[in-house]
Amino acid sequence: MKPIYYVIPELSANPHTSAHTENLGPKPTTQLEPYFNHFDRFNPRQFVSTEMLPFLPKDAIKIISIFVYLPASCEFTIDKKLRKLVNTDANTFLGLWSVQEAQLNEHRITAAIEQNKVKKEKTILITTNYENHLKKVADVNHVFINYWESYTRRCFRLTSNFSRITPKQRLESLDSANKKFISLNRNVRHHRLWWYYAICKLDMLNEGHVSYLLPEISLRLHEDFLHGTLVKQKLPDAIKDSFVNDFKKLCKIRKLDDADKKWIINFQNGVTNYYHDSLFSLVTESSIRANFLTEKTYKAIYHMHPFFVVGIKDQHQLLRDRGYYTFEDFFGVEEVTDYSQAIELLQKVKKTSISEYKTKVKKVFDKLEHNMYNFINREISWTDFERDLRKAINGQIR
Image (tube, rainbow, N blue to C red; front, top):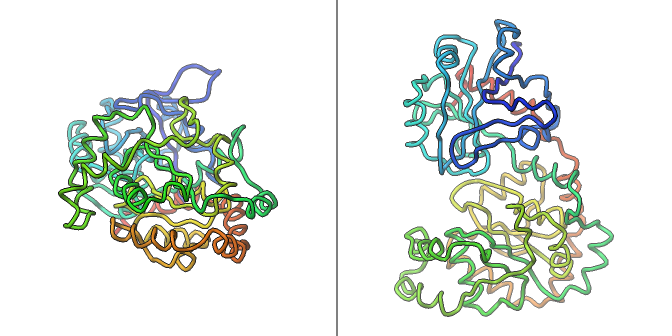
């Protein structure tokens, strides 16, 4: 089997810092250690600078690796020598990496590849978009990488002041919990508007620990989302005309914890007590249109909460495929993809007393403990990713 090397242009020259690249677009720097080193069976020896190309075996597979930030941008440049190598050498490919968001932008991808005069058939897009895994989309091969689960676990293991709860602590805090649920909605997303509106409409803010928007979020941006078609299409016809005005009356910015402004993702232990003081998590993921799971779902898992992901059924199925229990029976619904289904779920939550929920949580506690240890211990293997990468290289795609 041919070895694989990931060749990184624009690497930093400083030998006393972790390796990082300089990129175009909204994310000008990529630190390689938090991007890659958390995967099980990861081999850092496979990552080299472009200056190492003459030293690599001629028959080795070489992935010229460039980092972009979709869907906002696919800007990149590749020098003439590397472009020629990609286009003419059978063992060399352009790898475009974009793992932060599941949403893509095929027009931007195509335009950027064509602008750089790289053959599409020699390009591989490596993303967290599960639906496109091992598919050819717009003549470009796509490969999924399970970045978010692995990265969240890396932070769980290595970060100080991280919010963690042991099984013993969770059992001890169950009976004293004052709220039924926690629902974190810090960044603006279309589905979080109708979800938060449903909570407010049913007068349920006091039944859970609920956040809505960071104070730093642009109110102009929020206004654009509020009037957007992606929100209105999820509403019943009867409330579409009154929704915006009613939302503004009922739904206010709601700060829960002192979110650390330094870090975009809040793993800090300022949120721990809110998990102790609630019984389950109602999770609004970053996307409702894609089978996309981020730290938002894994927070519920490692805090030992039954959880329901507001989104498509496939998200729960993907978790089961990874060895986790899901809790459709606990909540009495299968999926929540629009306002009406949100109302259905929340009405069930409202009708069930907190004492009943405490009993229900205790009945599934073995599953909660299993989920937490599955998150800590299961293998998220770099070799599995490379197996799929080889399939894309060899044309074994759908």
